[in-house]
Length: 273
Image (cartoon, rainbow, N blue to C red; front, side, top):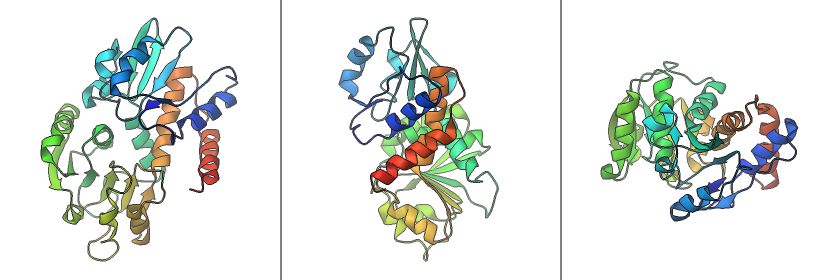
């Protein structure tokens, strides 16, 4: 697992639980601190004993030109969170998209399930691009995106065009929540706290909120959404389902979802989350 900062990552717990359940007791999975400047050299050091890598911020876009082949989905949204080493090649995949779809569907969240109004994505980074593709895969034709600086949404808007979904930019303010059915927050912990101050009460609550943060949990946005009666999906659910797909890509075996879930929840409990 590569990223910076990376010490808090729950991914090693999930992957190790999967490998143990699959009998791959000699496999190792560790968190490695790596920034954009160090990524190329680290990839060069990965020898034949390496099966794959998981990538988090800020590496999901940086890795693309360093790969030999990239699946169409990862190419279309401009970011890969998974590298698989096969046949002396570096293969890039994105498991955030199917992970987001699975996390939402598991909680009964789909298109057209309640009051009218679009989905809203908070943020414009790599995970926001994955959220766009997930919503497109679920049948959405348009989505609202709340950003602080529209000039930083260039990559996201290009990804939206490639996956065939239209985007309306909104200010990163409480007004962004007007007439919204589903909120997917892709911003760091604390960045969306102020939105929780208007729920419940001033604005009709969305039907569902997915917050990609899992530590600390619950976020103020998640707490307020739950109090307002919305279905709340945590970042752990996303992390779990994207890790399931990673395990399947790396092992070519069905991933033990429930054993991974139990291991992750146990680790969160031990951290007091």
